[in-house]
Length: 383
Image (tube, rainbow, N blue to C red; front, side, top):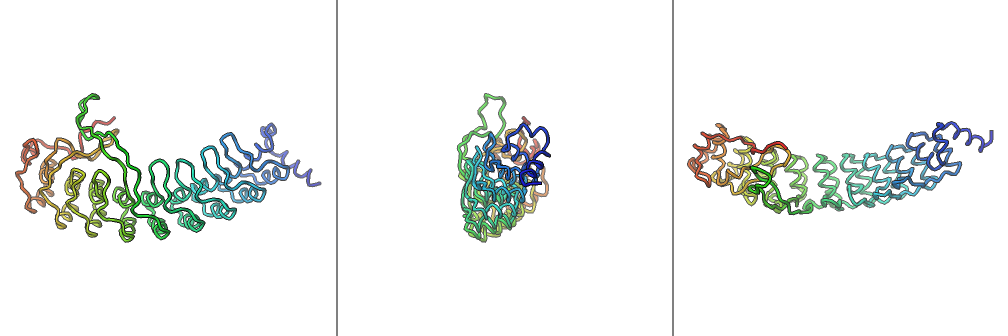
């Protein structure tokens, strides 16, 4: 059987539905199905290796998506454009990085794929690889010149931030070693947020304008409780008292997020236990979270037991969440412990020399608050 006859015979094995397709369309379908025999035959028949689909995706995009190294190799050797981008600006390398496929990434980089070609949204190829936690994939990209400090378009996040939020400290260390900035910040937005207790949709009470965003890798670690990454960031020189534009320090974020162990780590590295630009202190947050160990740690590091709450805090619009009620303005940590009926916290705070009679701004004393009783969760209705 001659070569041309062999090719014709192989292609004839393709499902009948494909017979109505052009050879270019059949090539894409063959790659999708992982049928390299047909891929090879169609390429020999002259199918266009770079023919795009309606969304701009090429056969190589699909080979990367399916993590099909054999098909990718066939396509590349047949002249596939390595850096072809679909209508969203996504390249085959970006797709391979989303899979965390080190082998596919290596093959594409060998074909001179550009590691810094990035769609307008969705993050850089490096960020996509970081998210999977594949240290091998990340190493390949960094070695090929991927920018460790590039930001994604929507919020200005960096690969190091993504490593921290996904709890990949090994990858975080690789990025730091490659020069990733531990002090980089996300974009800041001015938003109207609910802090508490609207009676109806026209009641603006408790809704205020606030600066949202401005997070650094350490602030992300504090919010998500990534101890290992926090240690790496501090060792890399991250400022322990870094704060959001709203004044919330990493210590306050950790305490408010319920991550007592990370808050204790920050205290051991010299974090200010009395930072209160957010409108409340870490001690208020520790009481809100009923974290006895953190309360003790904060007091041992000099936290002021008579600090007063001066502002409410935002809560998610669609769920009940830990937040500071605007009706607690003026409350001390002791007042809150009494209102929440937390006997262990009351004893510890009473032993710290706090004023047990200090009232809120409306004159409610700790004893009155205990008699009334409050939930440590803000009284929001589920949407």
